[in-house]
Amino acid sequence: MPKPVIGISTCFEEHGSLYYYQTAVKYVQAVVNSIGGLPLLIPAIGRNLHQKKLIKTINGLLLTGSYSNIEPHQYNGQDGKNNTKYDPQRDATILSLIPEAIKAKVPILAICRGCQEMNVAFGGSLHQKVHEQPGMMDHREDSTLEIDDQYQFAHSISLVQGGILDQISDDKEPVVNSVHWQGIDQLGEGLEIEATAPDGLIEAFSVIDAKAFTLAVQWHPEWKMMEIPFYKNIFKLFGEACKNHADPKLN
Image (cartoon, rainbow, N blue to C red):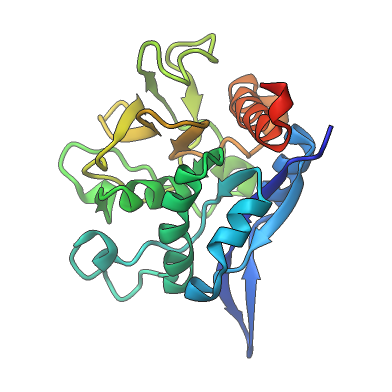
């Protein structure tokens, strides 16, 4: 059985006088440990990315989280604060890659920033600071804590009955981590809600009538994924779809 090739989004980062395309090790480990796949890092090079060739190469697309945010003009939002970190190179790479992957029936799992990218790619909009919205919770992590504590369970989510997540969770209100301060405002056209937070914020969605597995989640299921059955099941579904794409005879 061929190993599925999983494209993983990267960020454009500056360290000192050098520039890097990078992603967190946890995403690569999730692909290797849960799927047995071959990770392929996708450089954030915008128009220089040969999308059609890439799409023919990969069997799945993992859109990762990031400390950066999508530039507001991508969803007709107001200019952000000066202390907001953006990554226009990643925006230019991923926002146009998503519809190509959907069209080519490439399975997609979108996490945190990736979830927001999926929404924007479908014409949706974002809250730039969820915690400043009336009636909304503070979904940010406590950055003074150790990383393990930052990723601890933070709140429950309500699953849509009969949805993708509802079918793989024994708990109808599983608890998830929360390490974001932007979130879904208006859901994009052609998307449907899979889960919401106690304050009503959309925590997960899928693509209506998608021809392959396509799921976006606002939390981080890659974190300690092998220890948490709900998280593990998400990657199991994604992995099965990627393996089927790599070897159509499995369908």
